[in-house]
Length: 434
Ligand code: AMP
Image (cartoon, rainbow, N blue to C red; front, side, top):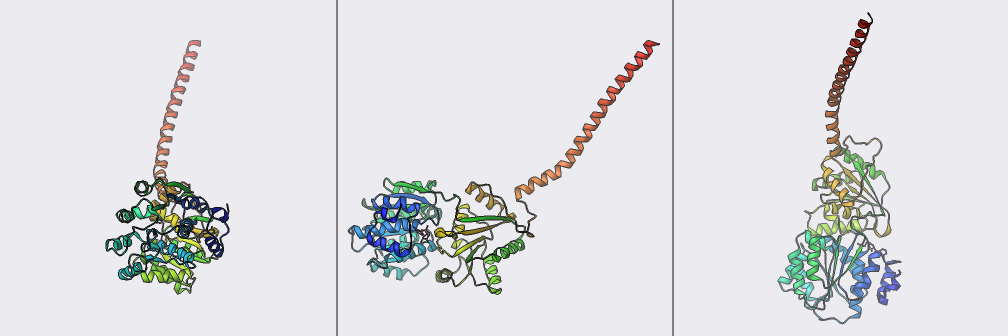
């Protein structure tokens, strides 16, 4: 299917041309006709699949073609679970609306509340927001959603996992009229809360599932390495960094490792920056921005950057520590292999990572085998294996010795009995002859 087949407005076609996209992705092929027909949509699609444009294009099309319910209220609200994802969606939206009269605002938690209230007074058509902050503004009556035409929830599963159900409900209630169109995107449709909330908020939605979040990502080469300890991880990381890469993201479990690694690489002259959750929003924005512009070659981060960053130059991702939640693994590696590029994901699995690794393996429904770099082999063979091996090692020799002793004695007894019987028989025969 081509973009021409999607019956998109000429202005949108021009934008797509400008972005240089040749063909709609699968989620775009399947979602755009549903949304353009005014239907509610419940869709699952994996990260990096082009889902943002799958909702932005038909949303913009609706702005072009339909008359606004209200001149004052926002027409489209897009909710995202994290500031990073919201920023990414806003970035794509800004590109699209730059040649239109439609204003868009980005409303994030952690940023100046009054400035945001002022932004609503400028009557934006599009609002991209994190749900907590938008619900706060509704409570303060800084905006009305009575004229809302489209409510779009991106990564609804994650919003619910983060406990945003009450805020989603408040936003839904503020815009609860029959003509509203609602789109819900989720990494998986097999999520109890997503289905429950979709039942409340969506009206006869069309379900579209394009691949699953845990499906193998064909553009990403995934390699796993067993490791013994921190120094071993460090040695493996240095080995990975000997490879040619464009930009590299390293995910760690702790802020201290993030800072330590970033400092080490920076000291070696590599353009490296660290990003962790305890930086303020301005600092985070600046770092993300600089990384996006290619000022830094390496970004060392905790899970704050596992979603939302959309940088086609990230060729390598390293899981220095395995993520606690299996879905997070998919989001982390999804920072590479974007928009048809090839990506490489390296994961280090030490004794402390073992349980998380097993969760990832179960989530991906794949039997994962381990790679080795020559000279950097691990003694650690996986905690279950090690337990079983040591059990076998402890038990087998003693058991085997005991068993063979017993067998030998039994065998000897049996032979003695036979020998005695034969001896007695021969003796008897000889006696009879005499
Ligand atoms: P998303 O899944 O929305 O985060 O998009 C992932 C990346 O794919 C972004 O960099 C988009 O700009 C890019 N993209 C979206 N649609 C297309 C398309 N039809 N062809 C090529 N790249 C696309």
